[in-house]
Image 1 (cartoon, helix red, strand yellow):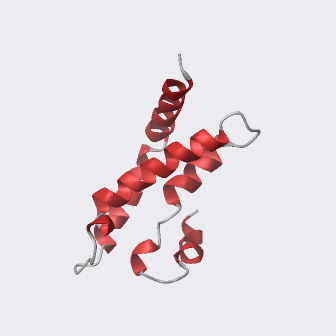
Image 2 (cartoon, rainbow, N blue to C red):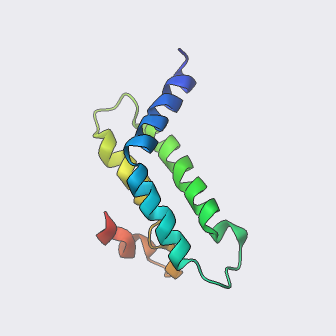
Length: 98
């Protein structure tokens, strides 16, 4: 099994393990997206795809390191949770969700 396939399986594992959190994030985005969204990448489906890419790359970076992969996965999934309010400090505002 190649490294890329191994990471894909690890990504799938965390997507499955935290499917309820991903569902929460998707629903949050669906409720909070501005009706006059200026860019298509603000739409929930694009935001969730972004979250899944961040998860994938976070797992690639974390692989082989002595870190808690659950913490990395949850941080990746929730990293932009407050981004729809268009505040400059959405990372700080999203902190209570973690």
